[in-house]
Image (cartoon, rainbow, N blue to C red; front, top):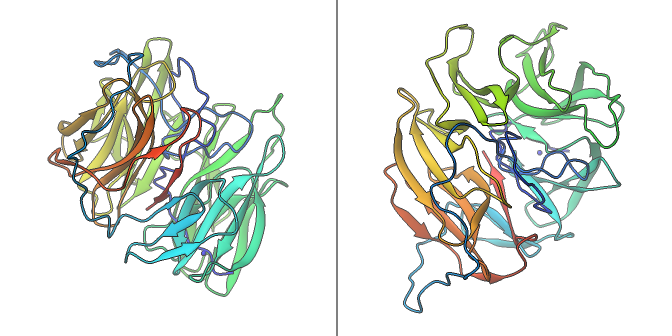
Length: 368
């Protein structure tokens, strides 16, 4: 995942209203970055069906459950920003569905209207220093120094400490409540002017026509076989290239190459870890309210090194923590839980369970 703004999406952002059925693919940011329009989550689908079917019986944690130290796992819960150092900051709103950090500030996105959204730039003390309109979740680069978004006039905007520039425009014309373009990732920076550092912003399209705009004025899809960008980070691109009724396929490719490092229809490659060594793997096919399981994939081979399946429930959001753990929430039929999973598959619960409905997780994860 600050008038200071920050940029990089891997994305996992959030599934605010969580209303997705029989999803065959979707936004891999782990957040609902299509704002109020198409409330399908950051996930997708392909050849294998879920190994664990949800049941009607809730599976509450045992009374002797222990919780790992949540320090280093930045997230929002019930209108509070829990920072990586353990500090808690009250926020002006509690309904943010996506968040990133940018130059020490929080950039949190909330629904505004029937289709689009608004993002608040929030200082470390909880003060809102700027609000701007956006078609979906805001992306931040891996250094946390540049952010990018598509405004509701179709301008692809970038910002860094003290300045901002648009890289061009896209046509937001789309049927119904379809969102034509949202940001998947931003790389480069911090200064996005062509004569300085330069930036490239990757966009996903609700019409199935992803593209990328850069500081040189180029507007094109550098990987023509890709139909959805999951993440771009550490010189790697995770992507989806096939979406069918049976599920989705995709893989991982090095920036500038045209041959993938690996491809698979067993998982959907989602966010890339901060060190570039692992990738979040989503089920290539599932149906229901969320994911039945989540995996950690080796970035070199695409093989799973860790996996967690929810018993009697589902996973709604997922993201990487700054220290390289997969963070995800899960609903067990009665309560929401927040977990972290190490690349080797070791899972810890990192917050007290919270009551809530299946459509409304109290947690919002910060994307790196």
